[in-house]
Image (cartoon, rainbow, N blue to C red; front, side, top):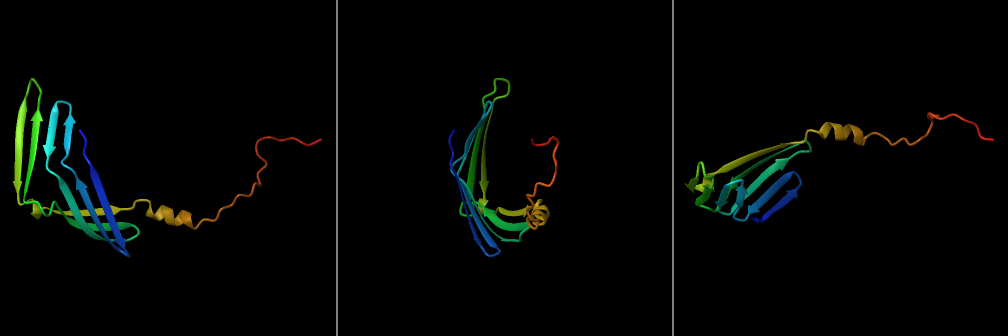
Length: 127
């Protein structure tokens, strides 16, 4: 089952924007098949070197969202359809934290020292 995912990221100074799109996702897990409508997110935010905060909306131009699910199990066959109204009112908040920020800053200032001053493990003399 194929699906296409696309993302576009914009950055200007400390402001960022993100647009994600997924074609109608269809997935199969074991005996369960799930089909849904196309979904996309639009987010804007503010970034710093060690963190970023984004706020956005899930499928802002879609009013109704449909999802169809089937489980083909012989013991427990289930079929369900989910319809959601007012999908455009779904808001998202995303916080990104760079956990290695301090480590990168400390190692970036270290100078490279390639001098070979150790005698090593072998000893000997030249004839």
